[in-house]
Length: 345
Image 1 (cartoon, rainbow, N blue to C red):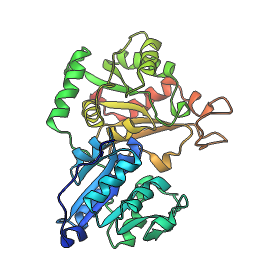
Image 2: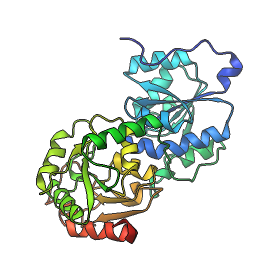
Image 3: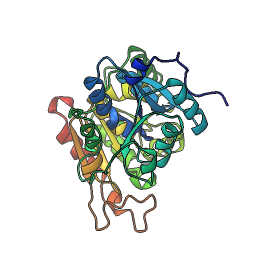
Image 4: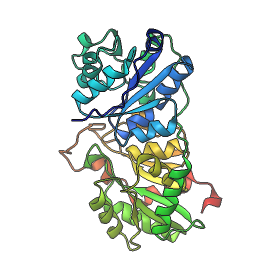
């Protein structure tokens, strides 16, 4: 199979000593929350070469953020060949998995910096005990940075929208029949982790009806593979809002979310993207902990029912999914009303 990473000319010893790669997290929301790490490293070494190895799709986030060269992650053999050809001096491992340490180890990167997790300590040259993870996930990487005398970036994730992405978002809205003179509410019913993180589709549909009564234009925002979910939400309400977004990359999706007055979402990648572009967010939390992954950087309202088993982090609920089922459409509407200024209605 062809190498998934671009090759660069052989680096001199001095250039190699100033060359770093960050291994990005796997999930879209986690990638958004990793953006301050790149900013911190870039601020500490403004003249040095910095790259990030990220999955296809999520790589668009890092490309738009602009702190680092972006390399597309592929399979393990391809990543090893590409990392070896790039001849990095340091690898920063943000995921906690064994696999994320294996590729830099096999590529012979001299310094491999990461937490002692998943039995990978023998693959690391700079080992850090994992944090307690009692704070927001944004703080999970601070100990890694401090261990190398780098000050953490305490600002919220921010994402600039390129003009091309904004144009794609505008075209998607136009194709859906939504014009710029409407207050826009976007409903994002998906969540990659599993169905337990999703507020029920019929509740999204009912909320869309209530927002339409208030004068909002509504659309259902989905990602690739969520077409059936989007149709269930759209058909659950009387208004049948358009379903858009499946053909947009994460940055184009961010541009779409940036055009909304409010985004209503589960604990998901779109929730974090909306916050990163400054759009107010109403977010549903069920099996996960808002203390760990609440949206950061924009006004938000968290809706959760902290029942006896919360947070369970389970992909299958052994009970009645009360943590989500007990949140009504009226509750969500009140949260939107409290979040937005009166002149937004």
